[in-house]
Length: 128
Image 1 (cartoon, rainbow, N blue to C red):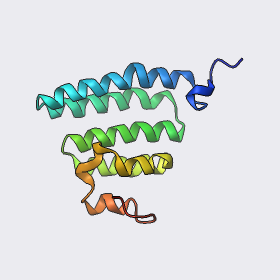
Image 2: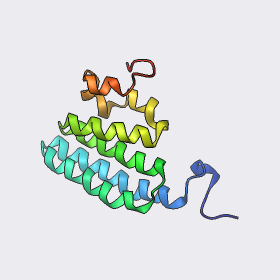
Image 3: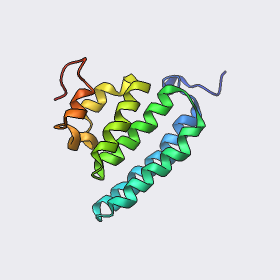
C-alpha cells in the first residue's frame, strides 16, 4: 500500500492534509481572533508568515496556487484589495480549480465590486 497517497484525500499527499489541518487551520482561528479584536495588521502578518513557510514545501502549481489564494483572502480581509487581487490572479493562474470557489468565498466579498477583481473572470460568466 502506498502510504503517501490515500483515496480519502483525493490523491493528495498525506503531508498536505497534515499541513492543512495542523497548521493552516490554526492560522484561520488566530486570524479570526485578531480580526474580532481589530488587529488587522497581525492578521496580514499571520497569512504572510504561513505562505512563507508553506510555499517552499512543494513547487506544484496547485500547492502554490492554494497558498497564494489563502494569502489573497488574508489581504482581502485586512483591507488590502490591490494585494488581494494580485495574489488572487496568480492563485487562479496556478490552480484554476479554485476559480468557482473564489466566486462565492465570503473572504473575498470586499473585492467583488472592483473592476480588477471582475477582470479576473472576463473569459467566463460574471461573478455573482
